[in-house]
Amino acid sequence: MNTFVRRFIILLVWIFFVLCWLAVVPQVQARDSDPNALYGCGDGYRAKSDLVYDAGKTLVNVVGIVVLNCHTADGGGGTFIAPCPVGYPYSYCLRNDNDGAGNHIELGVLELNPVTHPHTVYGGCAAGSGYRKKTSVVLEARPSLRDINAIVVTACMKADGASGTKKVSCSPENDFYLACYKNENDGVGNHVELGVIKIYGFYDVIGQYGGIAPGSGYRSKSVLVTEAGKSLDKVISIVPLFTGMGAYWLGQTAVMPCNYAPIILTPIALGATIQSGIRSS
Image 1 (cartoon, rainbow, N blue to C red):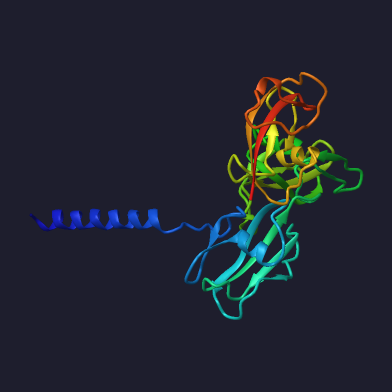
Image 2 (cartoon, rainbow, N blue to C red):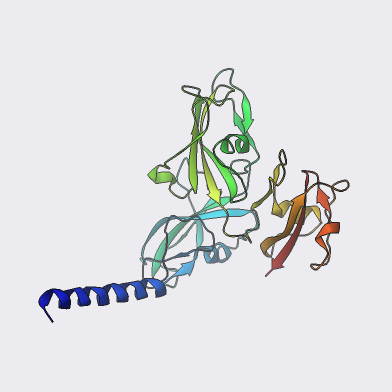
């Protein structure tokens, strides 16, 4: 066996072991906004959502958790509320100098509120400019809202360019967004830039449903829970079991058996019918 062949075999073996290591070791995306994703920069890993509970908070209305800083543990344990960086949409921030897994960790928590809610309006960014729903701008460049649960205005000023929304690269400080969009003339006098927060799978509690029929709108799945008189306090997933076109009667949300036939489910006012399975902790 010549030298070249031996070196090639050694290279293949090395690649094999690297791929095996990648399959076993948790792959942490530090700027992934998924609340349940792992972080780790010391000896071990923890879920970001753990620190929310450590601080006496819950995940109700949490749409994202972003790693702001992570390095080797350098102090005492205990998670506490900390100041947030200025100019970001975090509702509150968390810090733990020693999280029990060898990490010093700082997190920014994004909650569903008027700043992040996808269906709120923006505007008035210049004298005489008007207002639009954030969703209407994003849908000019995105086929659906079903894979997002929040939209944040990252910049807004006087219109200064061509109309039409286009997808753009997110800046390094906004790299936790799923995607970023820009419209230099939104038709009502604004230049607006937006970042969207992704859902975290089909089960995401706050994720949107809808857009099934032409002209039908979108709503958060969590709204149906509160409309039915239930609490979101311990809900960890909501899965659409059936979504269809057409409202058969006046919109009304009600609790029904999980094996109920979809054909007779309560329709909603947006022109769609939805059946959801809800899981609580």
